[in-house]
Image (cartoon, rainbow, N blue to C red; front, side, top):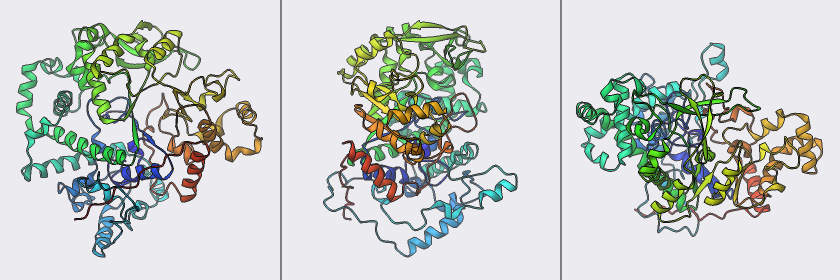
Length: 575
């Protein structure tokens, strides 16, 4: 479940109230792990796999209501329709009036806790740990939509919705709100310099990078003035001195992100919920990582990559896939004992309990395409760092037991299998890939050879289970029915049956996307690779999980011995 897909106010899922509610939902339904997508700051295209930094959080995820509680914003400011339009069609002025009326009536229920709750971890807990437990009569944002969707469609206006992220409007309004909060922070005597002391050096690089980028109308770093493009220390220092306020703004946002995420993760830990993070293997071309550490990537002296990442031609694409990410100079990394990668993993493992590493096979061998090619046809496989990288990590962390899950999908060679075996990292089994090649398919549950794997009904790149099942060829459906000893009239039950098949496997861990649990159609698909304009937008509605659906999930978890008994909610300490 991506953070951006959470329900709630202000156009996108955040680290606020609804994130706490989602953790409670996991506890109610016997789940123990929440897998999220990468949380870096996204740019053009909005993909979480193309972030401006591998060491920073997404400003979109900073919760504005928490900033209101801090006194850095007011609900009246955010309700101003002339200043803010978050692209979700909510009338925040009407909602604010309704919330004021509700508070005036002193709604109780804020202090209700489960009997026997442990208060030891809650004495110094943030107020948000308990705010989500209140019964707010006006929480359902659909009551405050400005006008019905069909009216907007008939008027020829793009449809704003609480069920989709409108990144165009979000970019403008969220940045404006965060800058207003930063202004209030300074007005209230906030220590700007102290913000930087709370951040990693790589995160500060990101803050400077973004300030330069803003000053140049968002241009990518490779077309900046030469001294800034080349990250000349004197030029960067001079810019930072001249634009201290702009750099500090980004430090403020990262500080708030880190604070909110730390509180949310602590609440998850208190309830026994573990967070499974996700990182792409490559950095985005237009990122602070590449800009500030070009020597670690395959770049020429004039600021252009010599080779870029991709995937060779196959049965699905005659010209291959041209990703365009700069490739690592693994020889340069080896000279530093892979210090940058160790720092990256240190940052990530400080944020998550487990970490899925995308395109793991790229560590054994990566596909390099000449820069400037229009397709990936002329690329070649080049040896990667192999175990040398992971031995450096073992030494850095003082253990071989790293909580990493390897994304080992696609064409996997014997050499990749040997690397997987050497590291001991669990791989992935995706159930949607199991039905197109007969009984020997490695993703069919009877072919799982070890519990040291993670079984997925689908990933963020797959269609929802229901829509996928409805659109595959008849012969695949027939094989599925035969495999599960079912008849063709089980059409409506099939998403649930496939989830049960994953749960019944020997896999140590099973991950089910929210859209699959809810039996949603293609509108809930997170990403369709190779397309643009409609990805990374789906949001869950606040009332998506009915009591009946919760009970069904609980029943499935209990049937296969996977139900997790979560600790009670932390009790709100007495004032």
